[in-house]
Amino acid sequence: MTDPTAALRQILGPKGWLSGADAAPYQRDWLNRYGVAPLGVARPATTVEVAAVVKACREAGLAVVPQGGNTGLCGGAVAEQPNAVIVSLSRMAAIGEPDLDSGSIVVEAGVVLAALHEALEPHGLMFPMHLGAEGSAGIGGLIGTNAGGSQGFRYGMMQDLVLGLEVVTPDGTVWDGLRAVQKDNAGYQLRKLFCGAEGTLGIVTRAVLRLYPTPRQQASALLVISDFAAAVSFGAYLRGEAGEFLTGVEFFSDVGLELALKHLPDLAYQLETRGDVYLLVELASGSSRVPLDEILNSALEWGMEQGLVLDGALATSGAHRAQFWRLREEQPEGQRLEGEQLKHDISVPPGAIGRFVEAGAKICHEILPGVRINPFGHLGDGNIHYNLSPPEGRGDFDGKAGQFAEALSALATQMGGSFAAEHGLGRAKIALAERNRGLVERELMARLKSAFDPLGTMNPGVLVRSPQ
Image (cartoon, rainbow, N blue to C red; front, side, top):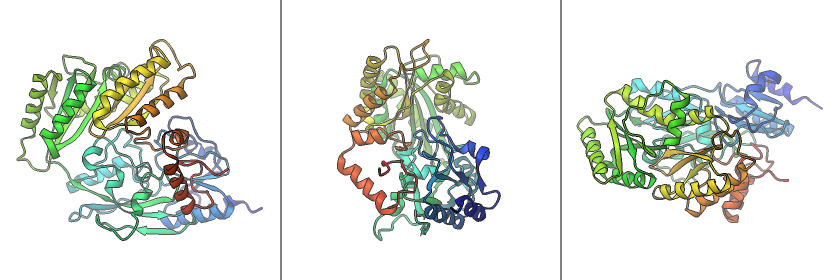
């Protein structure tokens, strides 16, 4: 039998094919819960090479697993079987010149989000996607999981920021949909179909992204809130008072703040008061004439008068603003350094956040008394990173991880929300999807998968179950 790796080596050259120990860094997911050693890792440098790799794998009956920065939390970018080739887009990291008049840019899928931000700075433009993993997350992976980030409620999810795509389909052909137009109603919106498909329908190789002018001014505040119900009420007031200038409303709890301050000694908490809940609020405008500080100050005064806000401070400089954001962004790291944890990526309608946190806490303490609950996330769009640490003095969850996942997923579903807000389903949440989503919805997804990938070779076992 012909060795399929010989054909792949010939296509990719010495820099483009990794195997054995060289492939180990690509093998496991970020949480080290999923992934087996693949046949090898393909690192194509062009779309032509991606297409050739996919064709060669299809002819050899090999599974293809697209991989970006591999920062997802659901095991969707690693192999589940040794007869698979991981296709890393890390060498495809070209950033085109931005179209200043149209507000768009063409980038390759391996571009790291932080690198895109840096490249846009001299042009007075921004790509409004910010998240904790932006130093390693690739554009292709963000498209595959339909990422949202801290400004999702203002600018939308990734599907709202993608104008066009180039995709290598499961049979190795290339769909050229690199159109930089917002209005294109010539049939099914294929570009949106690939957003959130987690590489199961094809490999995104290039994208046209929507850009926005960099704000000329920003106003940020860190607030201490009495409880989550008060945070929801104050958030609703902010949406009405600040309107289109409101670009970020992040929340975190005192549990998370304490863990971050404990394990990251360079963090600084500068308010006099501690509370159960904290809000990080940010306003931005492209005009220097908008009185952002006045709007934010007025909202803060109203919140204090209503008893919703206990304490607060406005950032006085860019460095001060960065300190506020670090308190929010280091929440995952503080909990990671504490030890064992369980992550749940939940979304509910924003008005239900307080009710979810309260009901979720009751459920979790019934499952495991003393469990430490660290909810943080995006108040504007209802995304809750509902993370758990074992009770003080314990190093594990007594084998109850599955109970937590099932109960919290069911609760989110009952409240009209989702158990997969930002990281997709991957391999980890397929069973949850089948129990919490309707049969028709799951069958429609399976039919789509079968239509695009009848042989089931493109990222099998992700999003929908592989055929038995």
